[in-house]
Length: 219
Image (cartoon, rainbow, N blue to C red; front, side):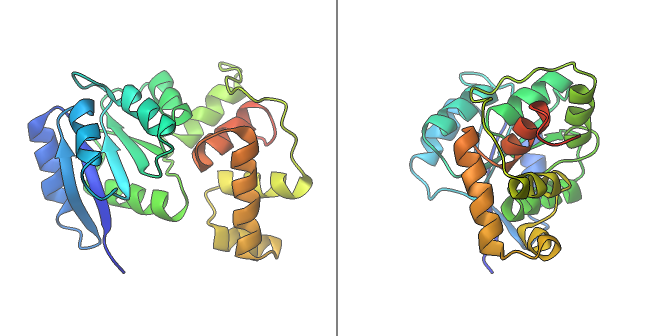
């Protein structure tokens, strides 16, 4: 199996170089490019083969991470983005997810967690950890600190789709879901793709957040 290709964008050269050096320890990952701001990143992506995963900082000069996410959304890019930021407050995490990020890590994350996050977004389409992602989002929703913000809130789901959503929220893979529901993996993938399409979100993490916020599933 070919290694997972990565690009990293961060304006702090020492941090960026340190992370890249640490990631070189893993034979299953290869860094194919780096950028110091959003504009440099987009210029880079225009001339190299599209990487599998983008490690993206939020606060950068010229063009920040949120602006990059917006451009990638408009381009319908298939790059799986993991935000790595010192800004790990609730609203930064939630906005990054709504804008299309597949996961969110603090800059204090250990290299092993970065590797795990990369594999998770490749295999499952998202990565959550207890501190900064699913538990926090669910907690905010359950306390009614957030309201639905997605455009299409009139979507209906079948009982089968709701079961798939609940299992996705528990971070089960398509294989695990198919075994549990006694359905083929192709059926699970089809249900997932159909739900993403009709809700108008970018990826699985957006789908789960949509479902939780609109009380399709319980947090």
